[in-house]
Figure 1: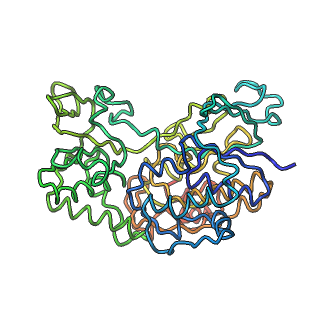
Figure 2: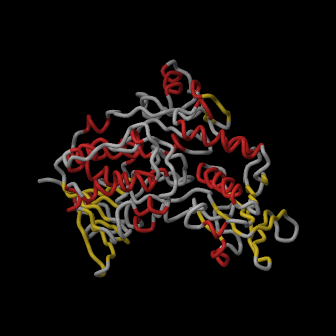
Figure 3: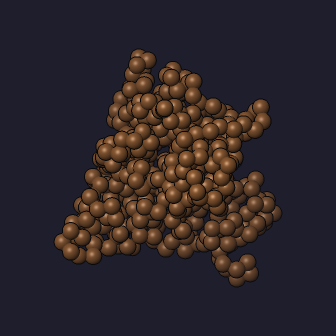
Length: 453
């Protein structure tokens, strides 16, 4: 009998998962919390992706679309989020057989095993999953043999506070604080033009936002830009430049470095936000104690400090997550930013993503927990492997079918290295506990490894 599989989330990775499951003869149902597919993508549709089309179309999804007469976009063109929606996700969801298995406006609120709470073990594996979700009609229930959670992290951004908690006063001033990447030169232009805007963060979202503000500054000269940087070295945010095999990502870092050098952005390094208060019609953003620490004054604050997964609806299931970054324990050593900050992680799949709860897999951005630098194509390889695993094809599940582009610069154990000596990308080594080829080779020679495991 074909297995019933619920996929949570109808973003790029969720739809890819459904495509692979269908090819395997399985019965997927996709539950999407938003009113349409790609709900998170619609929030950043103004943003250009770092990766060209050749990395953004899943192979199984592409095969489904090809049967409808769909024309694949030019492989080396870099799409915006809007183009990703219009030219790929929407046709995939409306013109293929996926249209019959996607349920939108269906937010998953809880999952358990039928007749089993989290504490009960005997017979647990044979009990189906019970998925509860909310739609416009009220509460609904589904049963499934397996679950692939690709719900992402977009709806749960990290707060401004450096300790992982909201800064004191942050929630009360939400009307002047935005998260992730607002549409600065489009929908939200009037909010930022001619204002003093502080941006907190050092990842790609923060850099892209600061770049947009710099472009806005050219049209609205009164715009002032403050970059609040928790770390002490701004150059770490500039990336691998020409060494990055994703050219758009490398060019972003190089262009941003030039803007900082030109003095268009005021840099505040070592600024760990602790409190935010109202100062007349402005924000007083403080680091350290309220009385004696540093502070800056701005009209608006954009918090681009990454995201975290929503694990609340998985609370009755047995999870095996890294205690630091909330990623599956086998994946965590490959992506932990405490150890290395690579934009490329070696391909991985069902083996690394399966949970102690048999039949449950985390995939896509959610599988990275609080770690950054996720690539869409990585998610496609994840769900290809997971679909094979659910179908019982263990050989295909273990096989690597992806080669990832290098970032140009990685840090390993706090030490920066170029791509040639880095610990990122390339085919997966044989050793399950090896995080890169260098590490695997060293271990095969009887050494402890290259220091990144």
